[in-house]
Amino acid sequence: MKTIAQIAAELQGYDPQALSAADVNQFLDRLVEPVTATEVLPLFSALGRVLAQDVISPVSVPPHDNSAMDGYAFAGAQLVAGQPLTLRVVGTALAGKAWTGTVAAGECVKIMTGAIMPAGLDTVVPQEFTTAAADGHITIAADVLRAGDNRRFKGEDIMEGRVALARGELLTPAALGLVASLGLPTVTVVRRLRVAYFSTGDEILSLGEAPREGAVYDSNRYTVFGLLTRMGVEVIDLGVVRDEPALLEAAFRQAAQQADAIITSGGVSVGEADHTRTMMKKLGDVAFWRIAMRPGRPMAVGRIGNAENQAISASIASASSADSYQNDINTPTGGAVLFGLPGNPVAVMVTFLAFVRPALLRMMGCTRAAPPMLRAISTEPMRKKPGRTEYQRGLVTTAADGTLQVRTTGNQGSGVLSSMVQANGLIVLHHGQGNVAVGDAVDVMVFEGVI
Image (cartoon, rainbow, N blue to C red; front, side, top):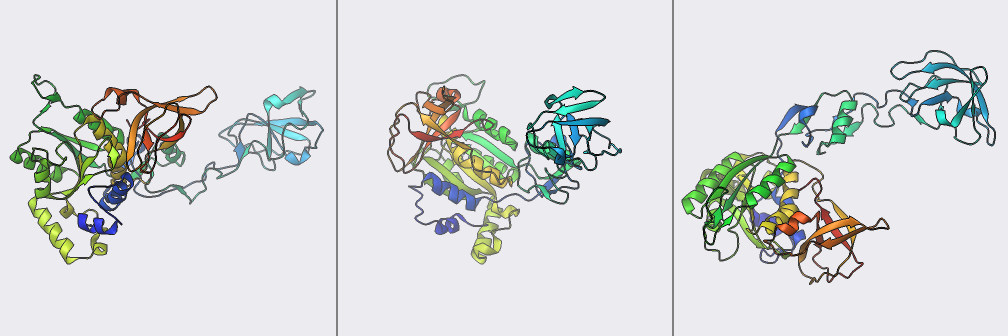
């Protein structure tokens, strides 16, 4: 497990006072490690969890060649271009049981969707492409299909013995259905990640407290709670912690004992008159950053633990090379990973989506940690100076010609939550990007399924 200094030494041009968004994600990729503890769950309890091992298919799916249509099965070699084909119906093949008769040239079998293809037959004509003829015959119109059409092959979805789902896959509804199609009632998943969260500051009011001059109600706890809950982690809510050293120390120690990761909001800006930064330094190996981004410039990252495990971590770091212990991912001596976020509500959400969420997904063992992006056409100009990444709240819609278009949702101030509510994505204006003109394509980090 690497220290902050070791990670910083690996990154070319690392400057904690002028980090790009890409630098932050590269740093976090090195800081966090996946948990390895696992549990076996029934499928109904596994939605949103991450596979801890490959799922190897014990069967082929489908288990037999079968019909993709309701229609008539026959030998496709009898088709002749430009000519209709008349066949005699000699039986019916139903789904769930094999038809055991024989089919000669000039004959066919009525077949249902999913029914096993009778021996020697390789083509299915949909019922609507046929007309009834005399004495139990059907006629297939000329050139409506080719030999082999509408036949599903054994194992064309998954072959027996192959990897059906790889370790690190997030178990979506479709993935649950796939596992069920293999006849497997349980899956082995990474144990649920534990994330502790609290807000800091004397100016923060909890819900139910009477208003007072200069104080604001704590919205960050609820947005972060929602973001974490959507990820399927175990959320440990430690409430609002006043700006007092003893209270902060107790909160950090409790969080480090209970959680894999700690998220705080507030108290990480340079020169703030509080004790949060001091306590982070006292209890952990922490870096304080100024990121070239808007909103969300100040951020702290590192590891937090109690005095005993920090001392053990320091001795390990001094006695071992980075390579010798960087994969010891379940040792308690490293403490919990810390994400100290800024205090403004939108800045909290943006830094969470851009940096914390991908890092937590990596800790969960998920191989798909990058936030989804799409390209949309801007319907308005946006001013942007190169040298920082900007995240504008945007509303993506579909134009009359079917193209995606996006506009901002109004006031982009870092304390304006109403424009975040109206948005369905973040317009990402990258570090080296300049002004955006009407009609320019921009990247959008979509919210669906995230917030």
